[in-house]
Length: 622
Image (cartoon, rainbow, N blue to C red; front, top):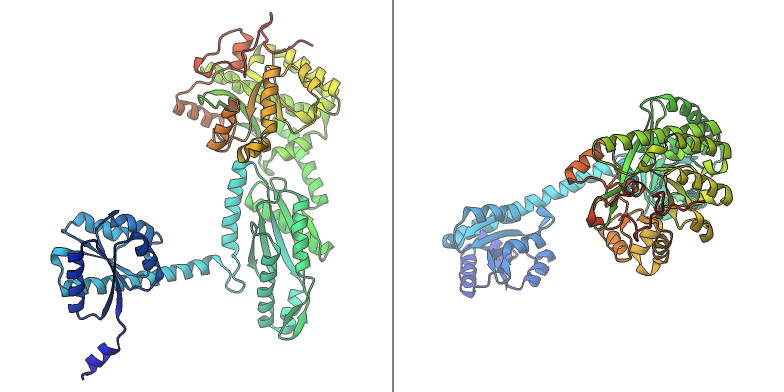
């Protein structure tokens, strides 16, 4: 017996999966395989589910597949089998009854390594196709494995196997975009080990590395499944907490992390004790960009390290935070005089049935040259520390809103513009009088504005707040109750107020969409809207499911990212142009006793309002 014969006898048979519904063709293909010089073991099948199971098992080195299968073209099977591209374990040879360059090109593109017309089928051509497919499949696997290794090296720390700084920053930016779009909060933690340098210097880097690896394991065990932890470098770690938006939430997570360091690290029989200092920052309270959040958390972590070996500092610290508030207040005075620092972005309110714009809400933004983007969460608390500043900010924003509303009206795009009034105004009689006097001077423009106030503004002094609301409404301005359902104002108070609009608070809309049994508040607000002759607008309409749910319950108007995102005035003009839509000015129509401009919308409100002699519709006199 020759050496070649011995090798052939010792060679393991090549397992081939043959997929062809023509029995005659299967016999020919099997005969060619047996004459090709390859030692093969052939498994025949035409059952698609079996093909998928066998192909994924990794037991087969090559799959010979006919182009035509009983359940359709084999390309459809390719999509299922090789959705992960070159990571297929078996080489694929596509067999066709006729030569076709188009089929050949598509076969290679879809995942096959070789293509062979049956008319050209011989033992030699089949062997070449089988060996070529297996070689290419092996190469693809090597490349895929190398890609995975490069990805691992690029985005994961080799010592702890945690995400590295680059991957952490990518995840932080994604979370930031998601939270900015949906109006959600999240937190970042910065952590530094206490006592690590002593262990590393005294016992060597090998012990220090093992301590870092054990630290990573303890941190992963302390955080929730929805959170992620990364090693930024040295003994510095960071965590991302997507579902944490409060100081108490950060404290809860920090306490679990702290307890994870209560026990000693046992390495080579020696006990080592280290602690952890933790700093936290919450979006948007402590920062409005990923870089600002990390910087704030880093400052907080070092403050924790200086003052409390095992403590947590959330945010920049009280002294720094007070300084920031004072700085915002000082700069706000200048912003009120500047031309380009305070500005609005605008989010349309739409009819859920027709998509017609029925109003636009103005959302305040402040871009400062040195402070950067200052959030409304910082602007309002700072303004409320000074009555004069609060009045100045209110009048400035009202003036900006009226200018924009007038510009749209002049351009043939009248839109009722909504603007939030600070709840603090209703606890400052002097400030409220100044605002009312300013509005009285611009009474002729009243039909362009709808002034929104939160339900909580009515609670501390219901009688005083009611008088302010009635005064503003008596001037012709529409009144909207924002976040309705979240407060505890009495029905009697609401009944007596000249309310034009109720806005259902976002959490109630989300709860009702997720579980129809949790829709009592939504149904109640819709019913109250009918009772008060008030338009009902649902906030936070984030998907089609929410829109359909609201329409099924009789809510005809909504606002949210599914309908339209906040835009600059220029972007909103382009948006209207693209939609070939002109906004309907409901409020102006009511004040001027004109019919609604778009009959497809029906009534501007939940039920047709009755007009009194003054033409103010549902605005009841005091």
